[in-house]
Image (cartoon, rainbow, N blue to C red; front, side, top):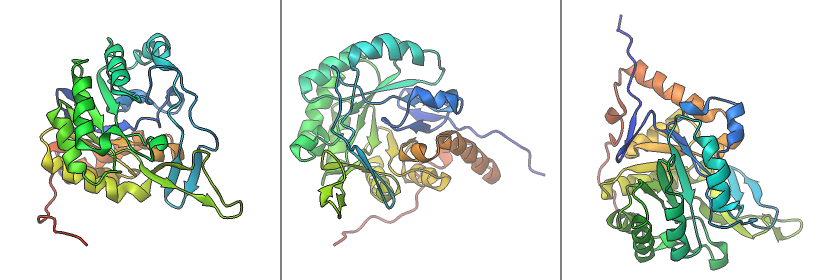
Length: 312
């Protein structure tokens, strides 16, 4: 009879060691989930993106369903830096899991200022949301191009000594070059990826189903895109990659780890099942025990694949 053992689920993200590779995606996690499961089982807590000042968000309706996920145009509503410092930070200080603060801004100066101001005791890492679709600019964002990515990450790196994660966008034709630009500018990790820009139309009214016309598509439909991007960036860069996009099952988690991700973020699936992250941690541990896998290092980047060819 095989001796029982406890596999090592710890995930190393640069200088950080998380107790496991499962964490929420920004914008899909709130303190309300503490009423549903023990939040300290998570590898990290990633908060909803904050901006420097208060922001109401986009006009309604802000969310619509699709066949395999959802489209949202929330618009990053934010109560600002003062609310984060005075109200949110003391609350999250009561948990053991590391706190990752997601930030975003419309200009590099504002981005740099916010990065400096959130570099506070109790914050473990900063996730720079340089990829949230800017609808006013037809979906353009800092992470659409290598040059703007390098410039904004350089500015952020100069403002904080905390680990800096760059959240990238799938809405670019040069994801590897963008990832390499973020690494060269000083990012400690990459998050691949944010939502895919899309839209939906009500055929009866002939109007867009979102008040902002376009929005970010998430859920299982974008998983192949996020998985491909994770694989590409993990192969091209020397810093850790955190996979994100359409992850809802243990198989999804394993695919991203095998592709090269060192951890994963769960988003849309939490709206459908609030306890999904806790369940995935338990399932991952059970899967490793059943196969005698001692640590995540035996899984991460273990894909056996030929060099990708040219697809037309």
